[in-house]
Image 1 (cartoon, rainbow, N blue to C red):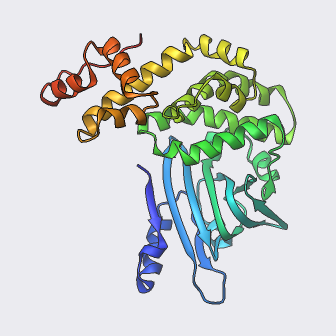
Image 2 (image 1 turned 120 degrees about the horizontal axis):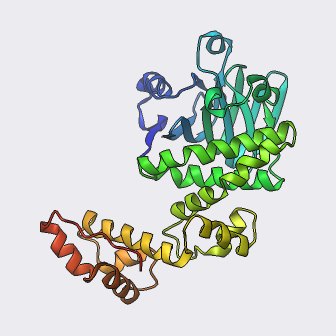
Length: 325
């Protein structure tokens, strides 16, 4: 589960120390201060790692997040920051550039140049990534510091949707799944940065090479949603349904079988982790159309009903995992 912080949960006298402790967990040193005349502000975060990538989902009002020359001058790991606004309007300032970031907008900035962001009832997802992980020249990253990323291009739309899902859903994935997202995320962002600087084959290659992985990641993130189908997968990745089927087949995935198998595995874990949940509740949680459909599919895969599985494994350490079929 992500690490959370809410300045409003602390007494006024304790807030400076609590804020300092919360900010100390970030890989990039920042300060937060009030911008209104009353000195009141709100600031909450949920943070998690995806390998070398640090993601912070933040909500703020009446606050300014800033990094000044003192922080920049200190020896630190040079870091790229990308912020996607999901609601509200934020003002970003880096060097002589000032931009307004509205919902759906994506801004690129960096730790090597002072910056400030004013949050007026803003929700955003911010990625912090070391230059070494981005694997691009520092001058290329810094050339577009403080500028909006074009999200109207096909690649821009893909990245925006991906980052929105990453911040809203991916942050709650198990550690192994989050680590698996590191490489495709870096490849996507590298392609975006290269395309913004100059369209090249180097930008296109990682986008194509990671399409199958990104589709699998999308399926895992949305696995519990009943309307997940090939149409959604294709639309989310800017390809036709036929091509989406082809890419998944190259990954050894038959979509219907894969969804059923993964949902059964998840439901089996749920049966044991939440013994008070009814079979119908577990069925709905894992996107099965009804109790009867779930029970039939479970029996075919495991050889026993969900209820029998729960009773047997409550006292038996030899768990029986559902299989595809």
